[in-house]
Length: 213
Image 1 (cartoon, rainbow, N blue to C red):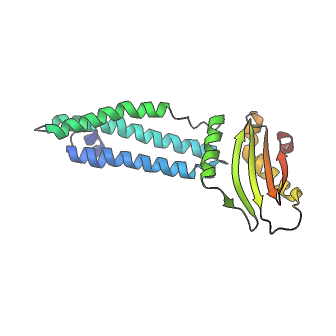
Image 2: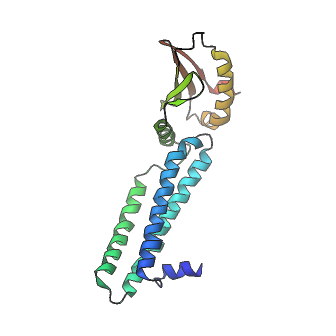
Image 3: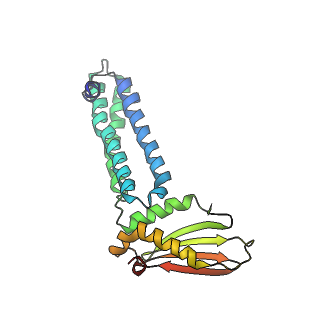
């Protein structure tokens, strides 16, 4: 903690404060943010973790931008002789202190109860699709529109027998009611649809709030 306070007060050298703490901390924030984006699709069923991770990363980025940034400015002002390098470091930090808040204001807050957040989650999941689910079924795309989630599957032509949706629907009801019940209760979600394209025909069913009673 004492070392951290020295950095914030500008008592450490400018190269250490700028390159190790400021630049290194910023890179770490962006790496964490990329990992969060890449894995966000896995947290659809646990949106609390999704939102918590978002705020941790943003908090870290603000800490680096303002507190460590202030340490860079103080260290630069304490540098003798100051030189061009010190003024460049101050300029970079000042620019970041303006740009970072502006960028964050333009980012949709990770509120698991909003339509935008649901769209964002499914857009992220679609990056890794299509994805093989079993020997004959591929999940092609997930969409969210008009408060309806739709899972679009393609079933291989190699399956010659008819698709029996009844056991699939039973499993889907259990999964949907566990994962999406609070969205049903808040009326942010009207139904979850499952579409299976097989030999040119679409076989579909939906799970509605009444199925979760």
